[in-house]
Amino acid sequence: MPTINQLVRKGRKKIKKKTKAPALDSCPQRRGVCTRVYTTTPKKPNSALRKVARVRLTNGMEVTSYIPGIGHNLQEHSVVLIRGGRVKDLPGVRYH
Image (cartoon, rainbow, N blue to C red; front, top):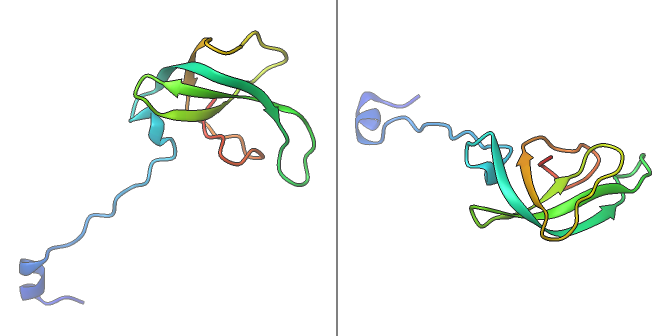
């Protein structure tokens, strides 16, 4: 428990909330260009070939994004719109 004098000198520290989708910069979606489209395998109990893409966003960041649905027509240089939302069994994939 701090004294009044300590609070006057230092003050209370605000707890900074860590964002789950930092590349979006508090925006609902971001536009980007696919740099690589590939498949990857999920974590331990699951088995599949999940479709993912490496996307270079308009703010300069490069993220790994999941491609949902059955079949897609994405290839390198395709323009995509990504949103937040992680894929639980793919480590490092935090966008759809």
